[in-house]
Image (cartoon, rainbow, N blue to C red):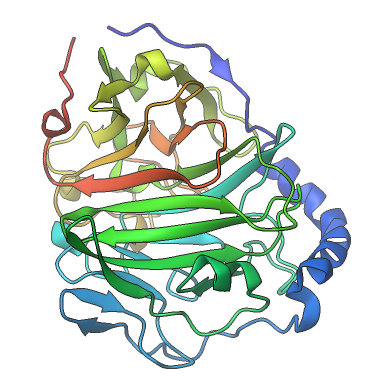
Length: 371
């Protein structure tokens, strides 16, 4: 059995604090956004009554050439990534896994962008947009880093660039977003590879004019949908019910964060890997309380979700947990499960993170279960 780490609060201005401060931040953000060019035309992109579906081009799925295109990029028989106004909250990447029997618009998880500047952590999902006055930062796309860095207002999704890299075909696009409250301006390069059809690569850059980041966390935010309860580390598995035997939530219903350092994370071939899985053989067969909405009711096959990154000093992994679904809509069958699931390392320009979802057991990634 792995030792239980102490609670951590590195985020850790909680979500209530973020929203309380959001109104005051909005005024300052307008000035910052104007300097960055975002306020040159602050009219937000309005979602159309119906998006033009993403189109298949060979093995790839890409946004249609339309002002009302569905912003989705992916492999026809593999993983895919989406952005608002595809179904779901603003300010989050959507992760689609149709090979699990979960057809779009149902997604397996979301990914939030959370840069840290001088200990203050931003959050793309809940910071108030100066374009809309609502939670969720605006995101736009481009085919090159130069175009992403120069981009100034939201518009139709860029279809991305298909090319050969390292002997395989890839689809690449860049995501730029409004400046964060802490002054950070991360740019994400998203790459999908034909030879790794169940994995998303995210490379992170800092746009000119952005404040230097201590780190930029990509947090998988919807573990409760898959009822992830088993965290796979180098020396064994950490079960959520044992990690929080007594549930003492914060004001928003989250169990306190728990963190493990680099030495506790599995190392394979120069990479650090951490995985999370359900503790149920068939999550789709669960019985739910009547007040649990349909979108929280799991569909499809059992799956392993994992983060992968190059081994480097200072890397950590952390999780928090809930016993009710986000928004307080019903109890989670079986009790507490992990909600946010992430890795973090000191920021370097162009650092890369991989998020994968596979129907295979964690042992295929190199893990060994130790009781």
